[in-house]
Length: 407
Image (cartoon, rainbow, N blue to C red; front, side, top):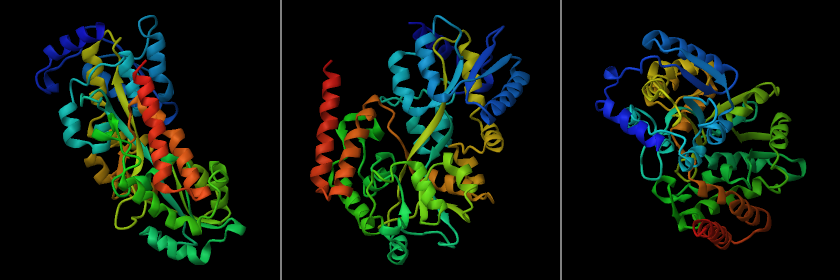
């Protein structure tokens, strides 16, 4: 009820997306929850700029984004919680089910017009209502050894050609390596020709696209790499194993995320970075995890909180966040500027971010991981029939969703 009343009061006070007419409540003060380290430093900078412009005191606390929604659910209403909190978008469904976030009432039109489609999808609920304020994203890119691949890799077909002479399973040498049985990684093949997790941009759990003809065709294409990545998928499940082989020069190209950057830079490899190569004339569409800011339903100052969440997603603040944290914001104008960067990592993230899809944020996504891991393992390691294996995964996912919905 509190959330509904606050939303109605705020909506009534706001002309149609005319931020210049919105003023914070008298006596407003805000508590912001953001990530540790450089992200806290950026938020303290943003808080100072906001305070100068709007005369609102802002306190910044470091709370891991994976914990903010849980803390809102557990402590909201009984303890002081963040007025604006940052969290990974796959937690949005849980937040909305618990009623701990307000709708984005000040900048949904701007986000629709200026942000990437992945970020837009990530910020919305299943009905298309925008709740989040996208601030940054992560996705996987290709790291490569310049001593082995001086110009990188334009296509997977080129990688296969290179691997014909380079790969040797007995010596643990592979042209290209990724976490094969992890759907988060191998999804780029499942989606190659149009396979998908759930329909309607990942919001309709009754429409599962993981065993469609498109998904089957994508996984069959993935198997063209099998002769050159002839490893048991369980043996390369550990990221330290994959990164270790890359550091030893036994892997020419490694699919990994930004969290691997520092270690790979210190590995001694002549390191290159790029977006994923094309395959069969199609983009390899990786998953994208979008970090969102959200306004707590428990805030006493909804106007000030909405203004702050909007403030940190402006082009100016998005670029400042990048400068201070190395994060890439999902704002098209900013990404266009960053695409000209001298930093290979930033260029790779920007390019891959443009061809990445937001991981479905609905709770039913939790039912996908284990069945798809089993299917991918069966296909890769045991030569299982692609269609039958994917249909088995589909059936398990559908059954779990049905059981959950009938409770």
